[in-house]
Length: 95
Image (cartoon, rainbow, N blue to C red; front, top):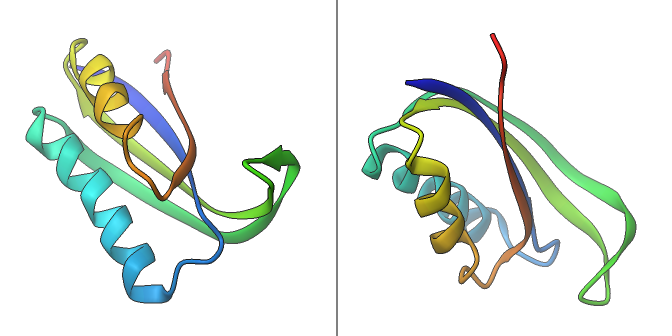
C-alpha cells in the first residue's frame, strides 16, 4: 500500500447537493479500487490561476488515501469522463 493525495477541482456552478454527490462519487471510486481514505480537506470555492473551459473559479478538495499501485491509473480513467470535474491530480506521497 502506498500513500497518495488527490486534488479535485469541481465546476463552480454546482449546488450543494450535487457537489456533495460528486465528492462522494470520487470517494466511492477510491474505496472501490481497494483504497482507504485518511483525510478529506475541502477548501471550498477558489479562484483559478487560469481559465479552464471558460471558467475562472472552482470547488477545491484534497483527499489523502492509501491504495495499491494500480489504483491511480484506474481512478484517472474514471475521473477523465466525469462531467463536473474540471481538473484532478493524483500524486504519491513519499514517506
